[in-house]
Length: 279
Ligand SMILES: [Zn+2]
Image 1: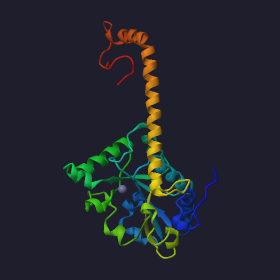
Image 2: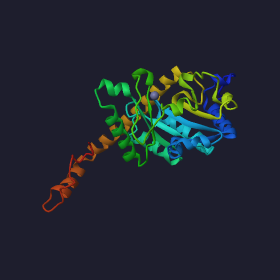
Image 3: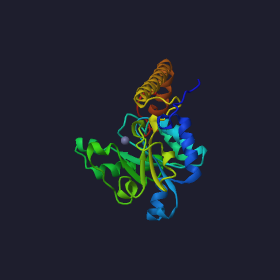
Image 4: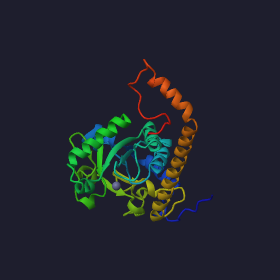
């Protein structure tokens, strides 16, 4: 299908335009992820021109992977800040594999945390964010170098953990030019229009608003719901087929189960559940 892209670059949120943006950035600036910033500290300002590549992942792991691939094609590494409290699930098999792929492409992960939710649930924000970081690090066998607050204006709070960069630290907001694509509304034009003006840029982009079809962000939220629905439907079909097969094979499997776990002298330490494969 031929995609009609908006004539005005500031309104063009096609993935093709994102590819062009990354290419333009590379022409003039060095790209950095938060792993680099963690290593460099204030020495980052010795780099004449750089763009910090940050993604706050709001709704869609597949869309995040799409951006990760576009960047990797051009040798760019960025940081994907992930929520553990969105309606995507980083620990679900399909999405976990996609996140692993993002890491394999050379990008790194950050923690995107929802301080307003922590507050609503009366959680200790520091301990909870630390636990979320530990879980990401263990599950994805990686190091988390930075954390970013989800909708900081909602909670009015950001906080930092020693050794982990807080993206809302003034160093990243006032000492660098902070540019965000929030709700497809660039404040001072597309980032590419600002490359000549600013040497040090902190670029925040959001995965779900960049789409091959260059659609409106509000429509894309429903597209994302539809996509999640289809994946959940497919999973349900797979489970139904697996359980039906389990039931069909039940007599045979029960016999094997008894033989393996219930016969005199059999090992029993790993036996749990029944033989149909159900959880
Ligand atoms: Zn967010």
